[in-house]
Image (cartoon, rainbow, N blue to C red; front, side, top):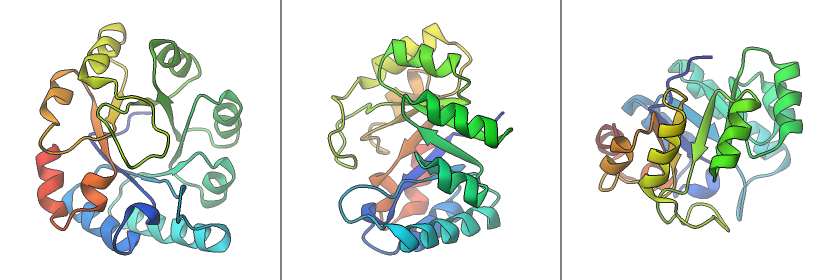
Length: 204
């Protein structure tokens, strides 16, 4: 499936200093091209509140015709008929989602060349590669790989969709584009911003 992953916002309520729906709507108005609901970590919603927030976010994405992706939760993604799912190196989840939701988007996190090969061979539509820079949005994140790793993967896979994520800001995004990223994914650069429209434009 061909998807526009150029400006990809990833967030849950735990990443925001104001309501996630408020932040998301501003990001949608500013021109993000994809949104991933990642409600996990300290302070994240659970149970009915988790599902209710997902439904609200999905409704906003539909208004702006932007794909709504669920992080790591096959059951929720299927229940909401989300546009796709993003998972780690988990072939059971990839295969389960593919079997039950043909034609939907599947993204896979990648931290090495071996994992890139795995994702491609298991039918991923895109990979999320990072953290490119040091990040504080994800607990226990691996060490930063730098834009050079994006360039290495791009050389190995000239046409495969690669989304760079991790510590990316308007100030350090240029080397990531130059390395060959297809898209840029951010969490706090948007979720903590009071000038989301300016940030989204600067990332593009």
